[in-house]
Image 1 (cartoon, one colour):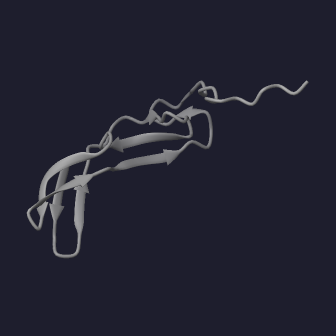
Image 2 (image 1 turned 45 degrees about the vertical axis):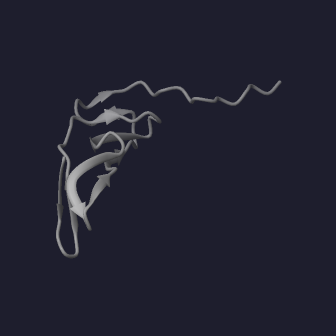
Length: 83
């Protein structure tokens, strides 16, 4: 990841990856910092930290990279069946 600080901008560059299903199964992650990352950039002598994710929403059950059907992940807390 690269971070450049200009007078009016912070420019963050993260490598694009092959689309990967997010933990929730609602999107395909195409780039991520994988959480809070300290960078070499400084503002007023203090380190700049970045959290960045780039993703596309999943409209269909299709892997955008391979164009193959993808099994949806089950809901974490499914509602109990009503009797």
